[in-house]
Amino acid sequence: AKRYESINLVGVLFGLTSCIAMHGISKASWLILSCMIAYKFRKLAPRLFRKPSFVWSVASLSFAAIAKLERNHTSAPMLAASGRIDSTGSLILDGIYGNTSFHIFRASRYVVLRVVDYYLSSATAVDQNATDDNMLLFLHYVFFAPLFQCGPL
Image: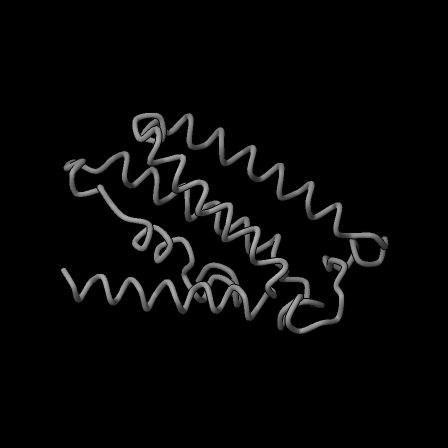
């Protein structure tokens, strides 16, 4: 059990580091915080999060919020046409992908899908005790490092 905890910790560190490096501290922090809040809400109402209709409803609202945030961060029509968002030009704030079309909002859509997949696989597990997890396991699954570099593989 200790070995798996250390593997999960390494996975979480790689995933969070990749997210911050690729998309910057300012843009990655809200995504990390929202995933931690989603995990806490699941712990408060585990039976509710086992219902696929509820999970997909929350995911739909998440997609709508991400689309709104993306529109708010696209000031010029040329940026919108090219799929880019506003950036400060700072590597620390915007990350390596600050001026590219694979920005934090596109990566966050994949994170929502990973959260949905995690919740639905937990809901359909035969042994519900096997799905009692911790935040480390959740973050290890959701923040899969290559996800922030090029999308789903």
